[in-house]
Image 1 (cartoon, rainbow, N blue to C red):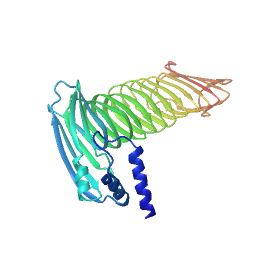
Image 2 (image 1 turned 90 degrees about the vertical axis):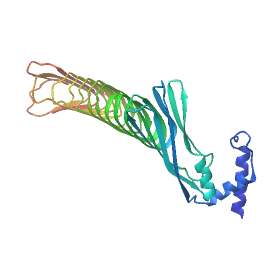
Image 3 (image 1 turned 135 degrees about the vertical axis):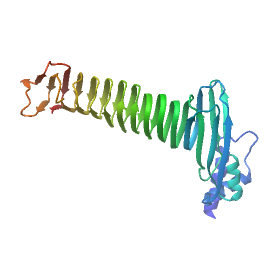
Length: 356
């Protein structure tokens, strides 16, 4: 009885001091009783949800899914309309409660200028969050804006994908023809067959393969894996790890407290790092400029072709294979192979340069 008294008192205080209710809705004993029942219930009554909605985008070029939590799949097709299918499960403390919660869940479209918005209405209160899957079929020419959290998103065959400041979301993106723009925290990103890419990642595990355009942005902690990027790469890294394999365009990195590996670049490489480690593996000679402070770098030189090496370590050291034909003058090591270009220029302060 004491526990029950505390629950009654606490619920009453909540209704007296909590957020305002919807217009025309006041505090009632049934509300208090319902909340008390929820506290003692496991919300084990389930009811399936199945809803559909369709709309014509007209002249709109952007489709926005707003504030969704759950699993969402968006598929671009050769079609003129947008069709949404919502499936899932509603949970209640009894049959009546579950039915009431189910009745408050539905997809709804709204046209606002050049943007079609899709929202999924949700119940005001629930003991257990409804489990929802949203499947939307859209024209391939549409640009998708996704505002979602705590779920999975699988996006295929759209012109553009913008993931807007999402958290705890796993994103799978494929065949995004023109642009992928992602702002993500504490999430996962896997993307392939993309146009240009813009990233703002925090504590996120990301992998991107086969981009036909450039890639730019920043990543804070987490990990980033890039493979077969055709355009220029421009990234800022703070913490975490980064791997770039088989880049075709120029690579420009600025790193602090990071781990970097660059393998088989085909374009110029520029790295400016502090308190970071770099493993650079040159399969072909490319113009390379690396400046580092308070970190280490390991450089694997090309086995064929011509190039020149100019390496200097200040308050550090340089290591090379005993049979490497380098010339040493104090802290500066040089090497010329063939015609002596392009230039591989290495500068490290308070760190070690290892040449292989």
